[in-house]
Image (cartoon, rainbow, N blue to C red):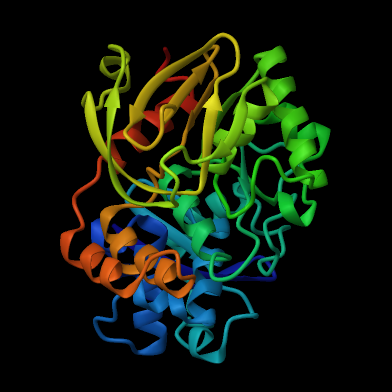
Length: 367
């Protein structure tokens, strides 16, 4: 794909150097790939590992910017650059040189995507009055900000779709208008417990109950959101029955033939990272997959709420290079286990399931 950086100033588009990027597992998705490409171009990096750059605060800021403000048209990722970036970014833009072919095509797209009115240094919170999709982010602590926007935006954001980002633990909630206009919500995991008495968890459980009753939009929930959903609809959440924190690539098995609809195998591999799980499921819940450490790895409630305990967004490369390192730093695993994870990381079925999720939230794929 091509990467097209530009600046908007007083209604004029200033054109940057058009770059090329390859999207592969080592760079996770298009947001990581694009941010790495811009970093190497503007900061002079040569062959730096994208995931190793995630230790740098400046790179995480770039990841967040690309995730929120980047948009895709055909084979081109367009990235508006803003004054909050260092001078190293800005001097590469060819001020005073206007490519009218690019202006006619991409300036119009930039207008449609609301980059004229929208502050480029915003958090993304409440960016659109009537978004297409909502992304709830539950990691409000280091090292996740920037990285989690990139993970979920890069896997789920398509074309010129309008996505709003909300940090629920920071009490960032969608307006009623934004909620009503959205087609679906995607929400991730975090270190918290579904049994915690935080106001934002109570809010989220009430919202899930409303989604279940109204059946007007779809919900994809991962890890903690899987557990919050289970509790909100009458299930029970508790410590892992295995007695330990699960942090590994797990074999997960289908317990019915639903996997034919999803388009993945009956036995799949995904990254796990959790200390609690769903112990008792809500009424009218179909459990689709289980593992040796968790009886409820994937559950479907009605036709519109699909949640998983595991992490399809954690590709094998992401898990090996970042998750294992963070788990070691937090003493979730010891040095021996860390070395084992680095050496024996297995391929996961991440991309196949994410493909289904993308069809599910857009109602292209249904149960």
